[in-house]
Image 1: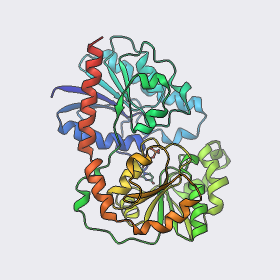
Image 2: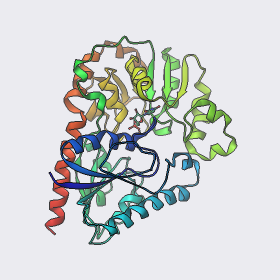
Image 3: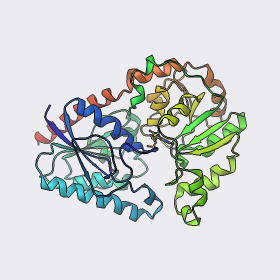
Image 4: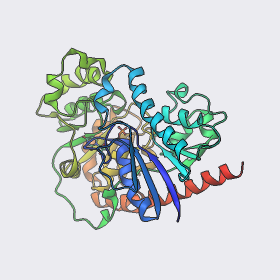
Length: 380
Ligand code: UDP
């Protein structure tokens, strides 16, 4: 296949990410499979990214994640500086067949405004869109730009302008799913885990309260705003509280963290992350938002850890209640489900991941969508 794709992963973290990194993990999972299928990939990222690609483009030397505690307009300014570089690159060459963009809102708007000479673009939506319709502005005139969701539930909630430009959804994936059904079972610990950035939508405060109520040890793994380690957060001054996730942690989560029954271990990465996830008796998602794609849900299945979650967003699409997890719409019932999760079979979870969420499946689906987007543009 002769197709050159400019994959825009944005300026926030290197690819693959050092630990936490939603979009960057998706790109790191997708790109090797696309290249195996013969797609040439130009990656727009930061210079410190180490993912093998055909060509790399960057505006910033290192990931700008540390700047996320700054005011919103400055955060957008960083995205915009990166995007301006991408736009200059696109204007300067004619060998890019398609842009696959992952930079929320700013990326979509910039591509939509680029004019008819720009290549067609597919923008992957990564967030819950019902809450932020204004961020997506007006896509009129942006008919070269199509979008895809990461779940059917996410698209169903998206503003009409985005649904009008949608070419479908592609579930997230993980390299852990490859041959997951063949891997030997892992001994389970007595704890449950919440893996993900600490944020009101992810509901770590609720999880901590439930774990204490039913007496199950809970490990919270993930960054608090830009802080990856408990000692870094402890050393940060009062200005760290400008970040809403830092405020949420201090006010709502930390009062339940006793270092014994409920622990916050900071960001976990690599083998340590996989072992911690595989050793948990359940993976808990006490969601307060409509989880759009749930990489951590898929990762959990792949290592044989059943999911206990509020039935929100993509969870009912990814989890089969009673087989790979337990879902409820009642927050209080979640605590009881935590106790019941040990009846679920880890092997069923691993089979599900191997059957539905491999990187090769995700890449094949994206290649279909790239064709579709190019056909739609050519037909105009
Ligand atoms: N993650 C990680 N270490 C952590 C917390 C998260 O490696 O301590 C990874 C997690 O495994 C997943 C990604 O970061 O691959 C987070 O993706 P998810 O979809 O769960 O969250 P979101 O994109 O909403 O932040």
